Image (spheres, rainbow, N blue to C red):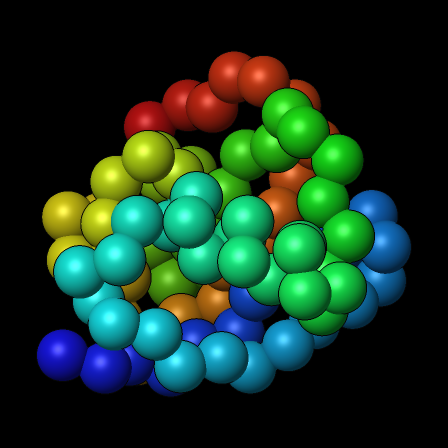
Length: 83
């Protein structure tokens, strides 16, 4: 299933609306966007779901983390996240 959401790099002040396959891993999406120059990610980073109000695992798929259409994911500097 395809889903559309916003990914925000607050440190760099950039946001982009993207469409991805929900079975794709979050970290793969971030890597692709970084390599394409769409966002500028300095690892390590955490991913925060605004809709869920919590951090999600970037090594999981969008389906596994229940990221749905219209969500906003914020990239936050750091190497630990709290569920």
